[in-house]
Length: 138
Image 1: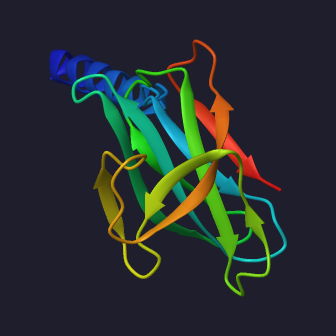
Image 2: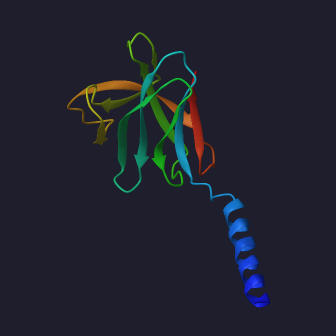
Protein backbone atom coordinates (compact mmCIF):
# COMPACT_ATOMS: atom_id res chain seq x y z
CA UNK A 1 0.00 0.00 0.00
CA UNK A 2 2.86 2.32 0.83
CA UNK A 3 4.44 1.75 -2.64
CA UNK A 4 1.15 2.62 -4.30
CA UNK A 5 1.01 5.92 -2.43
CA UNK A 6 4.60 6.77 -3.47
CA UNK A 7 3.92 5.92 -7.11
CA UNK A 8 0.66 7.89 -7.10
CA UNK A 9 2.37 10.87 -5.46
CA UNK A 10 5.20 10.78 -7.99
CA UNK A 11 2.73 10.63 -10.89
CA UNK A 12 0.85 13.64 -9.53
CA UNK A 13 4.10 15.59 -9.08
CA UNK A 14 5.26 14.80 -12.61
CA UNK A 15 1.88 15.74 -14.08
CA UNK A 16 1.89 19.05 -12.19
CA UNK A 17 5.44 19.84 -13.35
CA UNK A 18 4.55 19.12 -16.98
CA UNK A 19 1.44 21.28 -16.76
CA UNK A 20 3.49 24.22 -15.46
CA UNK A 21 6.13 24.04 -18.20
CA UNK A 22 5.76 26.82 -20.78
CA UNK A 23 4.60 25.75 -24.22
CA UNK A 24 7.17 25.94 -26.99
CA UNK A 25 6.84 29.28 -28.78
CA UNK A 26 5.66 29.02 -32.36
CA UNK A 27 7.48 31.13 -34.89
CA UNK A 28 5.34 33.38 -37.07
CA UNK A 29 4.60 36.84 -38.44
CA UNK A 30 1.77 38.40 -36.47
CA UNK A 31 -0.18 41.57 -37.16
CA UNK A 32 -1.73 43.60 -34.34
CA UNK A 33 -4.12 46.54 -34.33
CA UNK A 34 -3.53 49.48 -32.00
CA UNK A 35 -5.33 51.90 -34.31
CA UNK A 36 -8.61 53.47 -33.14
CA UNK A 37 -10.82 51.44 -35.55
CA UNK A 38 -11.21 47.91 -36.81
CA UNK A 39 -8.85 47.28 -39.73
CA UNK A 40 -8.40 44.73 -42.49
CA UNK A 41 -4.85 43.80 -43.36
CA UNK A 42 -2.95 41.86 -45.99
CA UNK A 43 0.64 40.65 -46.22
CA UNK A 44 3.00 39.81 -49.07
CA UNK A 45 6.28 37.92 -49.08
CA UNK A 46 8.81 36.65 -51.57
CA UNK A 47 8.80 32.94 -52.40
CA UNK A 48 12.28 31.66 -53.28
CA UNK A 49 10.69 28.40 -54.44
CA UNK A 50 8.67 30.17 -57.14
CA UNK A 51 10.76 33.34 -57.61
CA UNK A 52 7.83 35.71 -57.12
CA UNK A 53 5.74 37.43 -54.47
CA UNK A 54 2.66 35.96 -52.84
CA UNK A 55 0.04 38.25 -51.32
CA UNK A 56 -2.54 37.07 -48.80
CA UNK A 57 -5.42 38.70 -46.94
CA UNK A 58 -7.69 39.70 -45.34
CA UNK A 59 -7.23 39.53 -41.58
CA UNK A 60 -9.87 41.58 -39.82
CA UNK A 61 -8.51 42.98 -36.56
CA UNK A 62 -10.57 44.67 -33.89
CA UNK A 63 -8.80 47.27 -31.73
CA UNK A 64 -6.26 45.46 -29.54
CA UNK A 65 -6.48 42.21 -31.50
CA UNK A 66 -3.59 40.25 -33.05
CA UNK A 67 -3.60 37.42 -35.60
CA UNK A 68 -0.97 35.21 -37.18
CA UNK A 69 -0.60 36.10 -40.87
CA UNK A 70 2.35 33.81 -41.66
CA UNK A 71 2.91 30.64 -39.66
CA UNK A 72 6.28 28.98 -39.11
CA UNK A 73 9.80 30.38 -39.10
CA UNK A 74 10.22 33.47 -41.24
CA UNK A 75 12.27 32.60 -44.30
CA UNK A 76 12.81 36.10 -45.62
CA UNK A 77 13.93 39.26 -43.91
CA UNK A 78 11.30 41.49 -45.54
CA UNK A 79 7.54 41.13 -45.23
CA UNK A 80 5.16 43.61 -46.84
CA UNK A 81 1.98 44.86 -45.15
CA UNK A 82 -1.09 46.81 -46.13
CA UNK A 83 -4.13 47.77 -44.06
CA UNK A 84 -7.23 49.92 -44.21
CA UNK A 85 -9.90 50.79 -41.69
CA UNK A 86 -13.52 49.71 -42.13
CA UNK A 87 -14.61 53.06 -43.53
CA UNK A 88 -11.65 53.05 -45.94
CA UNK A 89 -10.85 56.60 -44.80
CA UNK A 90 -7.44 55.49 -43.53
CA UNK A 91 -4.89 53.17 -45.06
CA UNK A 92 -1.43 52.03 -44.12
CA UNK A 93 0.41 51.97 -47.42
CA UNK A 94 3.94 52.11 -48.78
CA UNK A 95 5.91 51.91 -52.00
CA UNK A 96 5.57 48.25 -53.02
CA UNK A 97 2.73 47.49 -55.44
CA UNK A 98 1.05 44.11 -54.83
CA UNK A 99 -2.24 42.64 -56.02
CA UNK A 100 -5.19 42.19 -53.64
CA UNK A 101 -8.76 41.04 -54.01
CA UNK A 102 -10.69 43.95 -52.48
CA UNK A 103 -13.84 41.91 -51.84
CA UNK A 104 -12.85 38.45 -50.58
CA UNK A 105 -10.10 36.55 -48.74
CA UNK A 106 -7.26 35.79 -51.16
CA UNK A 107 -3.92 34.17 -51.86
CA UNK A 108 -2.43 35.54 -55.07
CA UNK A 109 0.71 34.30 -56.78
CA UNK A 110 3.12 36.52 -58.71
CA UNK A 111 1.30 39.35 -56.96
CA UNK A 112 3.74 42.04 -58.11
CA UNK A 113 3.30 41.29 -61.84
CA UNK A 114 -0.14 39.75 -62.47
CA UNK A 115 -3.31 41.19 -61.06
CA UNK A 116 -6.89 40.26 -61.97
CA UNK A 117 -8.14 42.58 -59.17
CA UNK A 118 -6.49 45.79 -57.91
CA UNK A 119 -3.02 46.84 -56.83
CA UNK A 120 -2.38 48.35 -53.40
CA UNK A 121 0.87 49.85 -52.16
CA UNK A 122 2.34 47.71 -49.40
CA UNK A 123 4.83 48.90 -46.78
CA UNK A 124 8.10 47.02 -46.31
CA UNK A 125 8.79 45.60 -42.83
CA UNK A 126 12.35 44.61 -41.96
CA UNK A 127 12.11 41.61 -39.62
CA UNK A 128 15.89 41.35 -39.26
CA UNK A 129 17.12 37.85 -38.50
CA UNK A 130 14.14 37.01 -36.31
CA UNK A 131 12.23 33.79 -36.85
CA UNK A 132 9.16 35.45 -35.28
CA UNK A 133 8.01 39.04 -35.62
CA UNK A 134 4.99 41.08 -34.59
CA UNK A 135 3.97 44.14 -36.58
CA UNK A 136 1.59 46.63 -34.95
CA UNK A 137 -0.59 49.06 -36.89
CA UNK A 138 -0.93 52.33 -34.95
